[in-house]
Every structure is written in C-alpha cells, then in structure tokens.
Image (cartoon, rainbow, N blue to C red; front, side, top):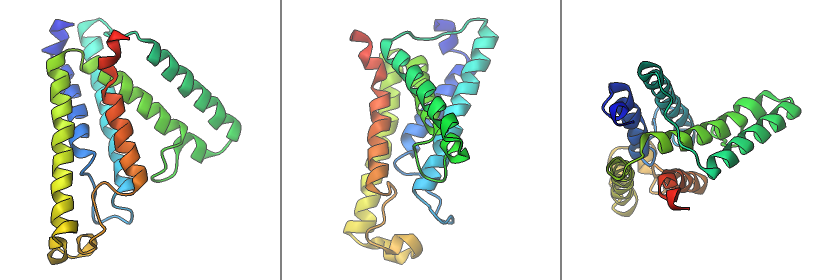
Length: 195
C-alpha cells in the first residue's frame, strides 16, 4: 500500500476527491437553466468515476487490489443491490439513471456508494484525511464568504444575473445543503475504523 501512495494514479485519484470536496459547496455554472443543483449532480459522478478509473488503473499497474473491509461497506452493497432491484422492477429509465438534479436513482446511489468506497481507499492515513477535510472546509469557508458578499452586503447586484438576487447562494436549496452534509458524513468513514 505504501508504494501505491506514491504512484501518480493514486495521487491523481486523491486529488479528484479533494477537488470534489473543495468545489462541492461552490460549484455552479451560471449559464445553464438550473445552475446550482443540476451542476452539482453533474460534477459528482464525473469526479467520483474518474477517481474510480484511476483506482482501477493503479490496481492493474501494481498488480494488487487495495481495498478496505468494514461492515458499513456490506450495508452499502446491500443498499445498492436493493436499489438496483427496485429500479429494474419500476421499469422506468428515470429509476435507473435519474432525471436532472434528483438524487434518488440507482445511478446516484451507486455514485454515493462508490464515493464512500473511494474515500475509504484513498484516504487511509491521518495526513491524507486532513488534506481532504482541509479541502472541504476551505470550500465551505469560501461559500460563507460568497454568501456574505452576495447576500449580506448585497454586492452581487453589481454583477447582475443570478448574483443580483440577494437570496442566491452557491449551495442551492435546503436539499443541496443536506446533500453537502451527507457528503461530509461520507468523508468521516475512515474515522469509523475504531468501531
């Protein structure tokens, strides 16, 4: 495992997840119809599956699959399988692939489970976990700063568009705030090793 931590694919996989942790509270594209929730739903699978592909490349290159074993991962596997069965029984493409910014399809549950697994694999020591937390809290700090600038001080009116509305924030709705809280909970997985 120590050799894998110095491998370029392992490092880039870690950076994908740290970029996700940093960008998640802030990410939006103002030129789209649903700039906040839809773009978060678009960003998450791209970086999670990129990290997974890098994990697979690293495993093939080293000739060894590095994984973690914990009872929570078995629960996640059961959850993903039950969601797959439910989506197949529903017979709707939206049940499998989702629609827009909803986070309740099989693909979304698979992405969350894969994110949990990737965090557990890529951030096994305290130093790398501190980097992940730092990325997340830096993103949250910039979110709070942007909230003060646009909402409290009203400086967004000079930028126009979405920013002119004092209620605009880069987090989105309360559902998105809950989603960020769930993301933070997933990042806590390596700390569960004592249980």
